[in-house]
Image 1 (cartoon, rainbow, N blue to C red):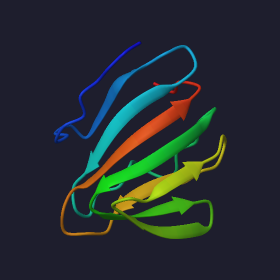
Image 2: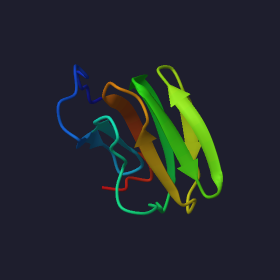
Image 3: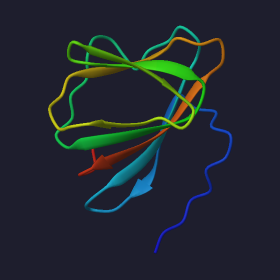
Length: 101
């Protein structure tokens, strides 16, 4: 068993921990910021749970407004970007299977 306390995130992106099969990370985007230049793709699935803030998930040509309580599955190989469209930090808890980072 492993255990982590997830409190008020301060860093933009931080891997919390994981196993050989999965991984958890925290991401915080400032207002107007996005998850990186262009689109990202991952070798496995990414689950993204919004803890606080307002954002937009752009997956391929699709756009989805997200907010606290939203759970998004980005499947392996799907090009994606997460954008903060609100006035407060966008805080997400992300799970990767298999580990990405």
